[in-house]
Length: 388
Length: 231
Image (cartoon, rainbow over all chains, first blue to last red; front, side):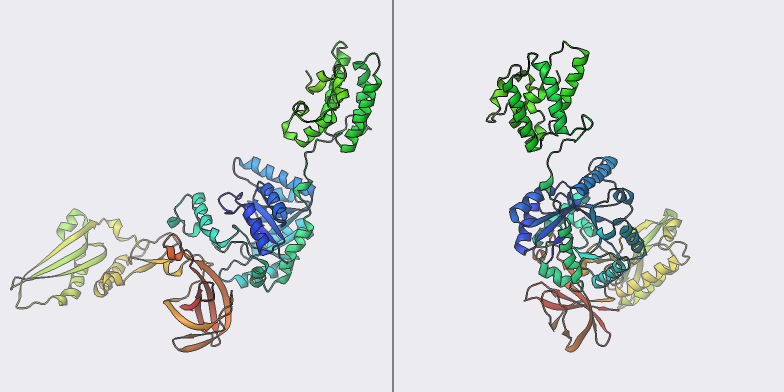
């Protein structure tokens, strides 16, 4: 079994010549179980790849190619959600440093954020410099370090692969076969070459050696790879090992409110309930009506069950602020924001985090709301979570 | 020569026209690799060609003209090889040989940025300044390149080298191989090259001779050619 772990989509701007949908469809036809998508210094293509993966059933191994200023380029694959976060942070650092459209990263940067990243070093030529790089690489990444073996259909490939595999063994780094894919099917080569000319600002006649030096860059099936890299069957099987190790999927991502401690010693849920009960008498000076109390308890149960207490933290903080203000200005109108946000509205807010305002979500048509709460006196005034 | 000297010019070519007594004219032309006004050198060049003139019953007059001239200042002489004192004599040698063999037969090869072996060089004049293109070190090419010659062979698809091949009626058995090196056609040059692909192999036979063969196409109808002799 072979999984292609070095695939660029057209999010590697003016380098990759196929979209994720084309690549995954081709992978399905070729019978590849998984594709590793790694665009240059970018994760921009992963959403399309995620969708294409779902549509075709070919697994997505999400990653990124990092071009480092002072070390060979690497493919990095986060093994879990936390490592994905670190990779995003690393890219943010590189892009902030380099300005628009560029990314400047050095080995030190990668080393600082390398936890939980599987790294495949992309060697150029086997030489003494590479041996030093490999030692440093192995020390940093431990058993998450791999060396890519790519058959380029260039002269001396066999000698180069043999030497690379010897150096990898000397540095205790396992090798893995990759195809360095730029397009899903052979006839895309022409488009890729035209894109290269656009990138290099030249005509195809002038392009010369600026065209890809290894022209055989389409997606290949397991049979062809097995034939090309037949002396290194372990390197082929290890591609599946990496697929097994990288369990992270975009499905794990959801909008996460920052988890914070509002009241020391209490969970967010407890803090929410405590603040609400403390604020309620101010809203209902004559005592909280039983109907409202029932509703509140119902809401808390719902919030707890759905795990929305953290998304209520914003509202809770507003509550805390309004409480603080009240202590300064007793005449200020009390607000019970949490109570004023029916659970379905909260749910809508959580599902559409970029809509921003819970208030917008609350008035979305068709959403059921807890009529009892909306009917409660003054409650509708509190629908706006802004602090006035 | 004095005129050239005064004008600061050198001759790039010289025409010698002989007017025979029967009224016909015969001409010889010599072309110089770089402008010159050295009388001895020019005389020598003309003398080597003079035998081409058939004097018939006699020659009335001979005129020599310089139809192509170029500025010739002191620094123009020594640009070929820096700090080489005998640049002038190299130019004289080039002139002597090219005027004898024909100008188009004496040339230097300059690299061209193309992976297609036939297109990876072009002819430039012997004393043209060096170009800044170099052949990539990772693309070894044979010492002698031939026009591709069809060979008889048997090889397995898709990527296997031939086990033997027959070239010019001799049979060679493959002992060692490097390859394939895949070279695609340059589709922007002609429609026929859109699909063209060659897989090159360096093959050492049992006698230690090394050959450069390619398979044209990747279908079962592909044919094999010998394209060069390595080392």
